[in-house]
Length: 368
Image (cartoon, rainbow, N blue to C red):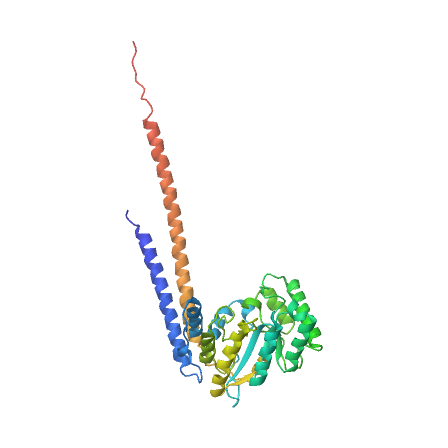
């Protein structure tokens, strides 16, 4: 059967659009790697899978592009515009600084959380813990542990009431959840939260997802929204060497690392990552600070060298053009197909009518 020329043209155009998108994506990665070459301490070219598998390839590609760069794309959505992925370079000679943040504190197993606190004390590394105010946190014995974390100088941030999406909540429901979290944490630490004027009110959205209602409530309550530029699903799969490689290779001045407070033997994974990462970063001159300290100092009025605006501009423009072309041809194909079907139906109906009329007996004249 002969393929209509319009279909051929549409197929060719779609293929070319996808090819252009792929080439521009490769170009964006090349530009990012080139820009990163001039960034002191940043070693994007060293990022890559260790054991292999889809997850490691996926997160390697994400960090080749850069989490901060992808954040620029996410900021096109209005309620993502205040989400912070990393701090700009600090003014002066403070040297490169990095903030370690840990999600899902305290976790189901309080003993392993205390082990993490002890290790951070040994290494003299202050951290920011994003707390889920669930039953594991608000129980009396857990409150003492959370207060201990705060008393040791670590910072506490809001990570919701459950390890689940909050995007479906209405504004009133989300505000009530924020109230409940703040009340639970203040009761646990037996004092104000934040504990000092220099600490910011931090919120990290569960699953990294925001909504308009969440953004409106957090803005009204003077919260800052934090994700990070160094993340690799450390909770999901066991490959400490890969997670450590992401941090060591992608760290630059102002980086924010996201790790997890995990339970039981999985906590050893977090500790193994830290044992690898902290000495390596110290050798390169990094100092470790809490999230508020990272942002409280004066910053250069310029993007981090980890950012590559032109990379994302190239990618976004090519993506938009490719999608517009694809939508145009998909719409045109649908319209042409509908017309062709309608024409076929009409033709079949006409043919059926002609066959019916020709089958009638013809009348003959004459008599006896």
